[in-house]
Image (cartoon, rainbow, N blue to C red; front, top):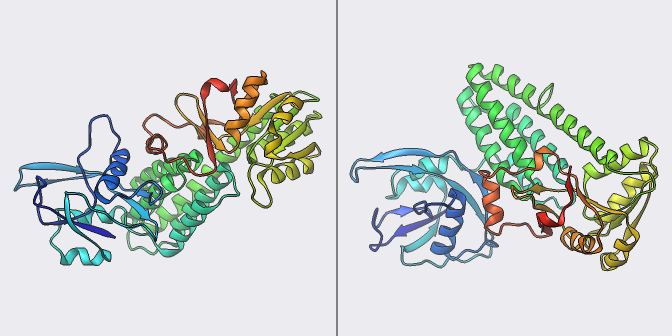
Length: 392
């Protein structure tokens, strides 16, 4: 981890080792402040440092300063080739193992802050990396992977007390809330898991009982079942929005759309799907969509991205999925959704977005702050609300 030695020009804790830190400005969320402080104090850009985990805030009193601090800890992952350039607030920087903190003169409670965002067991960090780096699955699929990871963690974490297990699972859920900021369902289900974990920890004081309760929370009659039910409702809504004979133009890949097209086929609607290739991956997202639609018994073809204007002229409506729906009604979805919707709106073509309740970002959600801070993942577009006719 990166430690910085504070200069004589700062107001507090001069000469002590610290992490990147700063006071929270009015009107700014903690994670937005963290991003700003990293850039100011280390020169690391959005591309250099990515948020990994938001720890639970905690407070402590510094008697010497007669001040009470509330700390919002975050862990960011830094790219291998990133270089640190300090500003006036620090004299030097060095990378250390976490244990070395206890051998240095640090600001108060630095290790407490680290303990709330510390590395998780290697296998779960690998599972988080797999979700972070997956560029083929949609948001709903990755959300299910996240729930499975939480369920596995509850059974596999080697701890000696229910509180230790709850703390590890709390950190795991916190990491999942930030693992793919653009894909809201992952954070949604991680937050739902956290709420259930708090209740289970309060009601089950011994370790085996807590493990069993968390297993039921995820599987059994728990969150996985609820996710399936919500998916079924959205698929029905998608099918109901389509008419017999519709030619539907779409972009990116969405398992929700594929399920909706299958429901429409089951209703006897002869729908044809035009799927933009949506990038140069092999197979392309459009190819995956078209293959799945054909398997459901409907006609489908892949359209090269550069033929988008001609495809708009052939279509009756545009139907896309969503990875996030922002409070103002704008939508984040895989490219080239933005360009597609702009063409469709200009041509007077109806634009429908299939999202569902797990895609909606609350105004207080930390991932909304990340999106506002320019943390839109590569390969995703922000579609303005005024270009969208209906959100399912």
